[in-house]
Length: 218
Ligand SMILES: [Zn+2]
Image 1 (tube, rainbow, N blue to C red):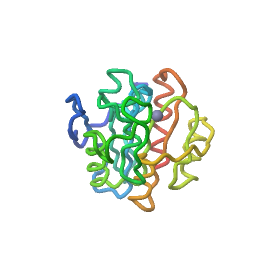
Image 2 (cartoon, rainbow, N blue to C red):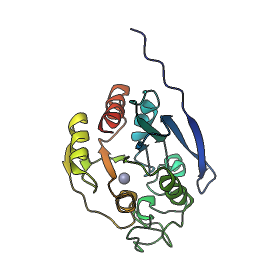
Image 3 (spheres, rainbow, N blue to C red):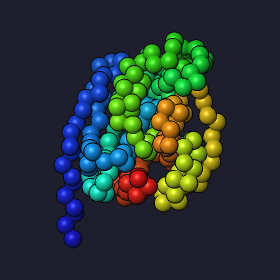
C-alpha cells in the first residue's frame, strides 16, 4: 500500500529568533477556522529533544476534519545545538513564563528562571503565539521520566493520551513559571500538558504513535 501523501501546510510562520538568532517556526495544518485547535511543541529543554521526531511525524498526518493543528518542532534551538536544558542565556525556559513566575536559582543553575518573567525571546514569542491561537489542547514533550504529567486542565484527556501511547500518569510538582501552568490559567477550559518521553530517541513507528494519539484526543 503506498504511504499516504503528507498534507500541505496552511502556512509556516517564523515566530521570531532565539538568543543566538536561530529561527523558531510554527507550521499550521488543517482548518484555520476550526474551534478545536492543537499546538504541539517538540522540545523546550534542549537536552530533551526526542519529541522533535513526534512533531515531524505530526507534519505527515492529515488532521481530522474540523480541527486546526500547529506544530513547533523546537522552541529552544540554541539549547538543542548546545545540548543544554537552558537557552543560550542560561535560562530554563519552562520557568520563565508569567504565571506564578518567581526568581529561582542563579545564572548557570539548572532551573534558573531568568532576571524576570518573559525575559527571553523564546518565551516571549511563545506567549505571543499562544495568545493568538488560543489552543484547545497543547502538548509539550520532555524527557525522560516515562510518564504523562497531570499538568492541570482536563485530566481525563491527559489520561486518554497516556493510555494510547502506553505511559502511566502522575502529577509532578507544578513549578512556578512553567508554560503549561500559564496556559491552563490563561485559557480557561483548555488543556496544556507535559509528556515525559523515555530516554534516548524514538523510532519512527513510536514517534508516529505519539503523533497520531495527539490528533485523536483533539
Ligand atoms: Zn524537561
